[in-house]
Length: 197
Image 1 (cartoon, one colour):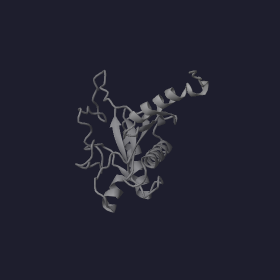
Image 2 (cartoon, rainbow, N blue to C red; image 1 turned 30 degrees about the vertical axis):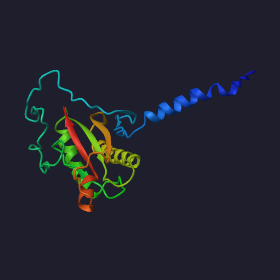
Image 3 (cartoon, rainbow, N blue to C red; image 1 turned 135 degrees about the vertical axis):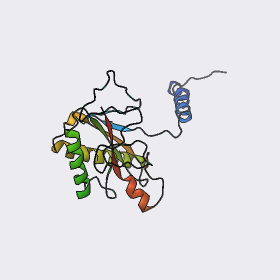
Image 4 (cartoon, one colour; image 1 turned 45 degrees about the horizontal axis):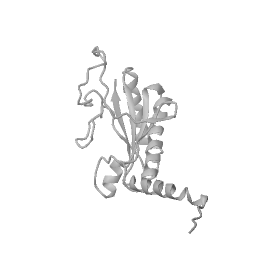
């Protein structure tokens, strides 16, 4: 008995092993958070909290903030909702459905934010773009980034240095209101401003 060896079939077992291994690695993974540096390049989102290496010197427009974050007590209209994951001295701005266009209300709020930031030159802001739960993960990540960029660009046009503004998109992953109706969705279509020094 003679066996013929067909060279075309030698790669088949290896290819099947690779396919099986890739299928075993599957599973639902959390989508990446999109972060954009001031120059527009994408960068990995920071997940660790940075602590200042030097103590902050307090003055008339600078006050030390504890690990709990800013409370918003030093800005008009800066009341933070008890539901937010982090408080900020800058109010959220909201968007219409499927839109990254700034409304007149959003522009008015951003003008107040620009004045606040111009008085606090050491403050940096991460602008977080958020969406409601409707739409795909990819669509909402892209829309959240467009919303955050719109706010960044408007603040920069008002004189806030672009290197003080960072853009991150959370898409629909961090809803402010977990409800499933228009009242909840309108709260979740927002930019949130995380202030750091």
